[in-house]
Length: 377
Image 1 (tube, rainbow, N blue to C red):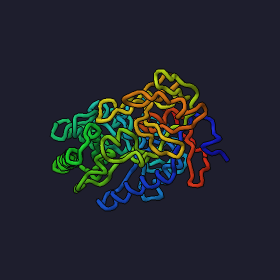
Image 2 (image 1 turned 90 degrees about the horizontal axis):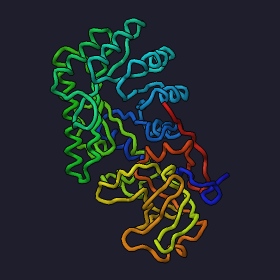
Image 3 (image 1 turned 30 degrees about the vertical axis):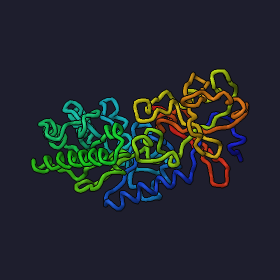
Image 4 (image 1 turned 90 degrees about the vertical axis):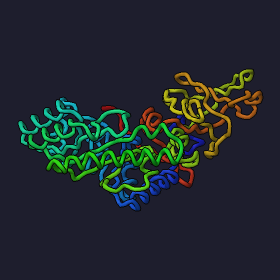
């Protein structure tokens, strides 16, 4: 069986013990707050990881593509929320999944989309389970809690024979903050906005059993989730450098790294050249505007210990440039000889994971086990 010393590089390595700690931390927090936890599996797109989340107490999963829904359903997951606005051309696929026994929920945030769902559902004798997406922070999509459109969309669905499941939101703006006070405020804004939208539906005589919120920072920093029925979060399972800068984890909590090999040097520039470029790390520079810029990733030794000051400062398609922040390291060639193996922590675990067809799951005994990863739409 392969180890970190024998496997080819670059490779996406998941440290299993770290991953399990992250899963337990989130599940214990959700249990303490008294809400159902429906993890977003788009980060990992991996059956083995989702099974570990399920074993810890998660109920249902969230996906970002219908292909994910298809593949997780084939692996035995049936309670699935497709948390991307439903495009009409995808309704036949959603119908086919439901008719095969998948309890697939879908979402919308517009009248046109709601009408398409209701019309298609009636034409095919199907009452889709639909959540209305609520915008609680201006980050992306959704209907503001006080908008008239919220009730209009709800009535189109309800009067059209669909099952109005409730409301959901995602506080993506939480990634822009980095203090406990600010994160707690965003978490409360997310909770209060979604609960307010739910109350408006109920006051209008419309059903709203589900109030679903979630992002990793708000899930971990919320002080109360009164009125919320479920939480969704995804990147917490691996964490990454963006989350480290946000302040909800440390480097030691990051379970995903890219194993790489030193293949050359530019001593006069203080560079070591690695075989992991942006095709391995992704082009995500999410830490660039945060309090600490890690370039394309933080360098660690083979055991995962952070090499302070050494980052992947630059990247081409298949070449990474390891350098020291601040004054260049004139002795970098001696410090990291040809053939040295390192691990690079990613800026964004979702983006880095997406560069690989499989993970190498690192056990405590040092052996690696391949875990497949889903790709495509």
